[in-house]
Image 1: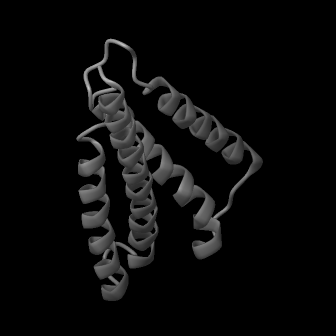
Image 2: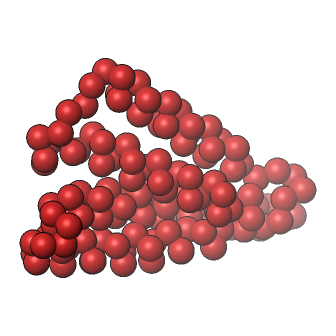
Length: 129
């Protein structure tokens, strides 16, 4: 692989990971708006939930063009879970105990290790790890 190809692959990977982070943010918005919709009985929150749902799926599908599905989906779900758990107490008066915070730290650690595991190798196919 030439230097230019390596540079393009690295840029593509960075872009995919940024898109995956964006998808995770949309997933948090979706989870929180579903909570606010109270089972899709509040029209304004329900509409917001639908928009976030479409945005998160769009961004996730873009990221998965480059990132392996097994890693991308796990990271996306982890971002959504942690974000909803951290922001749930802010918006919905939910509790965040020390035990929950500890397990959220485990999820965050797993997400970081998944990102590190997705580094390209000398034998990897461009655009796929």
